[in-house]
Length: 65
Image 1 (tube, helix red, strand yellow):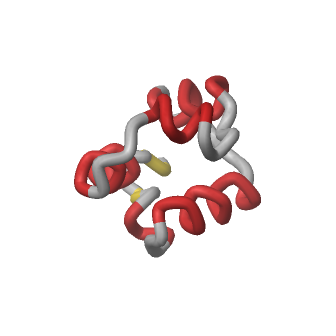
Image 2: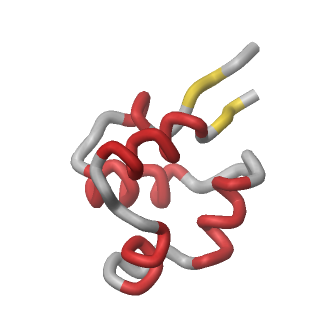
């Protein structure tokens, strides 16, 4: 199972709000909702988040067997 706990830790550490992601970086509110509920996101979205946050994929997702 993929979880997005690292994403929430990363945005807190980098002092970026979900408001900023939505209104400045044009990440949809439905994507934020999917992240909150550990639902799937596309690799394109994952790539965009890594660019915006200037981080590695491990700082956005974690795999739990």
